[in-house]
Amino acid sequence: MIEMSGLNDLLTNEPGKKLFLLGNEAIARGAIEAGVRVATTYPGTPSSEVGNVLSELAKKAGLYFQFSVNEKVAIEVAYSSAISGLRSFVFMKHVGLNVAADPLMSIAYTGVRAGLVVMSADDPSMFSSQNEQDNRNYSEIAHIPLIEPSNSQEAKDFLRYAFEISEMEHIPVLFRTTTRVSHQRGMVELGDIEKKDAVGFFKSDPANFVALPVNSMGLKEKLVKKMERLKTVSEGSKLNRIETYGSGKYGIITSGEAYNVMMDTVSKYGLDVSVLKLGFTNPLPEEMISKFLREHGNVIVVEELDPFLETRVRMIAQMHSIGTKIFGKLDGYFTFSHEYNPDTVAGSLSRIMGFDTRQVSVEIDATALPPRPPVLCPGCPHRATYYAVKRAVKMSNIKNPVYSSDIGCYSLGVYDPYNEADVMIEMGSSIGVGGGFSNATDQKVISFIGDSTFFHSGIPGIINAVHNASNVILIVMDNRTTAMTGQQSNPGMNVNGMGDPAPEVSIEAIVRAIGVQYVKTVDPYDLKSTLLAVSGALRENGVSVIVARRECAMIRDDRMRSKKEWKTFQVNPEKCKLCMNCVEKFSCPAIFIEGGKIEIDQNICDGCGVCAEPYVCPFKAIEEVQTA
Ligand code: SF4
Ligand code: SF4
Image (cartoon, rainbow, N blue to C red; front, side):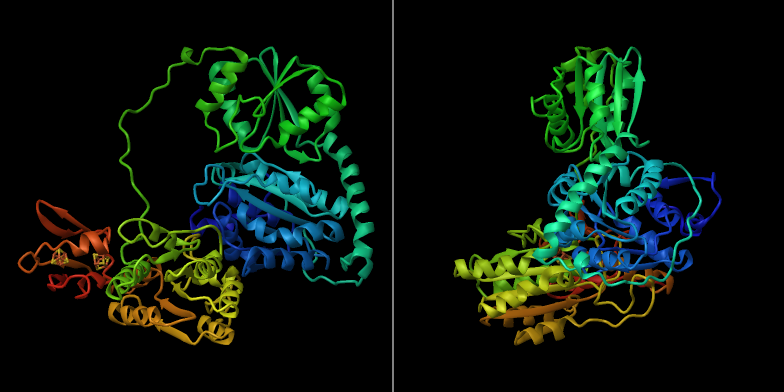
């Protein structure tokens, strides 16, 4: 991201000025240029930086920003603002759109008054996601327009355009990026900042906004007509263009990040191609595509994940009786999985076009990077919780416990030495899945969920477990922030997305209100109390909840450093008996063995002191470093 001191540059109203921006920063700027008045999100990588920037700049930009409790609520808040006449922007990661899909499908019917753009940041290759679904498909299911940028400049410019399309037909627009588009940097030329109304007014119109079947019947017809009219707009859109290289012998149709990767191959091998680069991809410019097909004997569709374009290009060829040979995924030349890189695209294109990829030698650095599995940070309270739970389970002589986990930093509990995630599927699933195991087996079930995930979608699972008399222990790993995506606020905190003071919502009060009897709050750094709370829960029947509350180590580190209260720990070799418990069972990354001695890396030890507890080091060999 831009340095904090430079973030204000995103507010400058100097058209023509150039900034070197991350794709997500360019998107935030695009929202500001478009005069967005309401922006909402639930943080999720690869979309998170958009929210971080807008949260920081909201007051100065004159917009309202909200970290909503989940993506469904985020889209509902943005929708009501858009039908009150305020340009509204809602953004999320791809799986978040599954949560928001219910309102999205109906919002498409009712339409909007001011522009509403819904951004989905997809994650091909799953750098930080549980799947790599291709959310372009949502535009087809919902019958809404789809816009796909390829770089930072397009990310900004296309977002403004998306608002124009939205207001042209009073329809929500899907704006789809991928990790490489959201996280690439590039020079971006700024435009002017539009001035839009800051206060909306909602004029009642139940026939349009109350989705009863009697109304929705007609609204569906209207929606189909809107998309028909937008076909003409797509035909003439500046977002869809043709570039020719060399003789332009082969035709290539592409969009999004696939365009960038494909262009690397074209320039590297000097290929003779015409490229139909699409940015407005639903509805497709049918006439433009059929003309392009007629002009080329062979057309290759290059796109990541699903054959979204390819299927439609083949349909257009069939409908217009065009005999062009079309290559893509459906005939096996490209894969359905993972993001593309220049080597895989070059390999596929060479098989179709018959050029030799060995003509250009590729220098590969033979020095392989050592494998570096993800680990919980030094001082992370989740490590202490996992350690205590594992120990309590062993002390209680529980055989074959089942651990259901959830989405967050604590997902790393799946790794050695904790191994406390047998199942993890989606946000808020741990307790629902845990209830299912309780029904299906006689095994003890322990579910883990984070504070933000608890609020996002965990609560219905607890209600379900209580109401259906499940036997589940739910450990709420409350680190006082939405840590994994960059420490955004959530309803358990006393600050909101605008940076204003906000009421804290109590996790304990919620679970007690649901009917949970065994509710304990512990500090994970206090291993004894945590062990006792978990051991007690293991003796209970029904749903038990333990709130393991201790702020994220990253936040604590910042505070301790700024207050100059930083401390570290070291191992006293005279007391150490080399039992290996701290290395093998507790496994803080700051602790290691070298030359037959246990050492603590002073550069990464955050001074949490948990390893000095007798439950980790029974010989009291770990001591605070005393500074003079
Ligand atoms: S005090 Fe111990 S557990 Fe905490 S960060 Fe340092 S080495 Fe790791
Ligand atoms: S737990 Fe204590 S005694 Fe055992 S290896 Fe670590 S420092 Fe040494």
